[in-house]
Amino acid sequence: MYLKQLALGPMQNFVYLVGDPQTREAAVVDPAWNVPAILREAQEAGYRITHALLSHGHYDHINGVEELVEKTDATVCAEKDELEEFIYEGMGGMVIPRSSLKKTSVAESVRVGILDIQMIHTPGHTPGCRCMLVRSKAGGAAEALMTGDTLFVGAMGRCDFPYSSPQDQYASLAKLKNLPDDTVFYPGHDYGAAASNTLGREKKTNPYLLASNLEQFLSMAGH
Image (cartoon, rainbow, N blue to C red; front, top):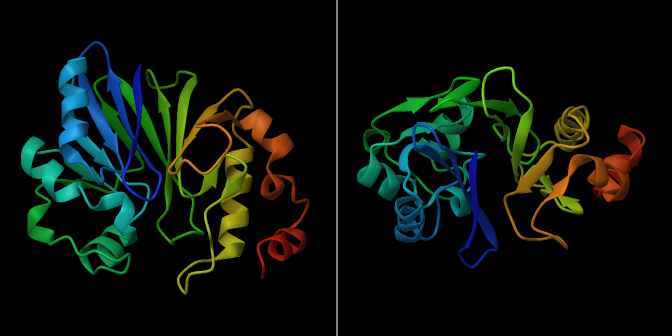
């Protein structure tokens, strides 16, 4: 599997290229800030971008979507409600006209070449947050997990927006904790001591994953 982590923009965002070495097809996770740099990276590595995978609809994660689609004709993949309310209606700070996204998908899995990418619904930060579990083939071992603003190294995404739900966030983190300990996750921002971590190590060190019950979690989250 081809995986490239790009640090772009003024908000310490991570953008990802995930590709299949056999077909040379690739997806961009959260295209934002510098589309020419993303396209240049893919071209230099010999990949053709076929998909844009959106972890959620906040401005800092989607402000390059229109330009990317215009230049690659990529299929945009997002949670259905996130697509309707945050992206088309601008709840996340930016409106993307429905007409500018030629191809969209709200499916729970996406194929990029032979890569099988499971779109895991992880509400909390926003109602339609997603994490993306990448396998080199259907039924294969997990090779990477992109967590957007659901889970950071040593922290988590904020859940104090009017549309956020700390209760949902707790349930979403529990869902991620059930994945294998050797799964390497890649967050949506460079907020931690490292750019990635294994879920096993994170479970031992991240205070939000160490919360033993919902009441303790809500107290830690300021609710």
